[in-house]
Length: 130
Image (tube, rainbow, N blue to C red):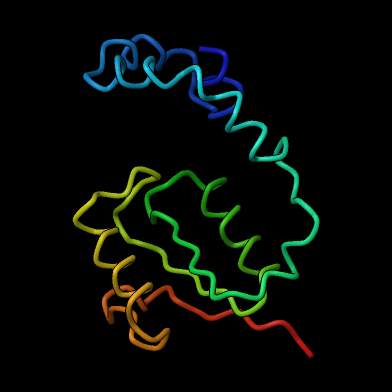
């Protein structure tokens, strides 16, 4: 509950319904991994060296994700040279498999310029000034 209220920002009055939701057992099942998420997220600070990434990088955000998640992707897009950002309208942090799989397949198997037209509405390649 502390993670949900403090880290995620869930209002305390939403805890009861969350505990009764069909997804609650699954969330409890992975709760032990939260400490690794915190370690990986570097205590919500930007790790050094992201501006040296030199491989094609696709950043994906769910359009219905919380603003902090979309903001994190936007911040990474500003830092990672040549990165591309896709905002998947109507998707949350848990993007539906039928939405993300085609995006990943096309991103990994096709040239960068051939990302799906339907996803380009929010797509803007980021370039670092020389």
